[in-house]
Amino acid sequence: MFFRKLVYVGSISVLASCASMPKVTGYSSAPPEIRSEVLSRISEIEKSDRNCVNLSAVNADDPALPQFMKGPNARAFSTGPVRETWVVTACGAQRKYLVALMGDHGVMQLQSVELAK
Image 1 (spheres, rainbow, N blue to C red):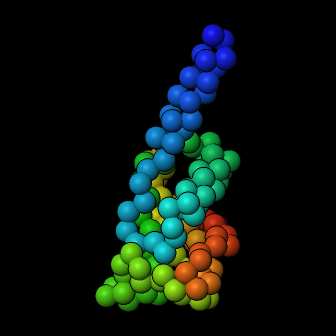
Image 2 (cartoon, one colour):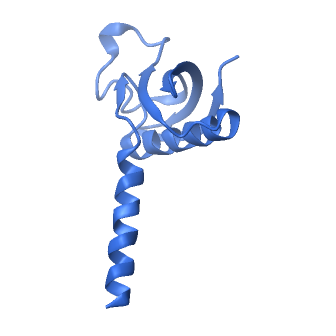
């Protein structure tokens, strides 16, 4: 019985932490699992820099990619670096993050996430 309660409480806390991350709007080449990792890193930076744990909005953009190419499969088979700007609203303030990805024939890998200067 104790184990069942422990699993139930653990499940609720995992669901609550997932619910606190906002949906990424705009355009990003990152697949869902990498978007999740980027959000996690941004959340860590916001928490350590400003003691802020409330990300309320995230808008991603790849400024180098022309508007007509922005779509779900635009970078599906890209090779090389991809640089995106993610504008994050956290605790009432907006900050820009630079997200570096590397494309290798359809496989995207996260290289870095840093606060824009």
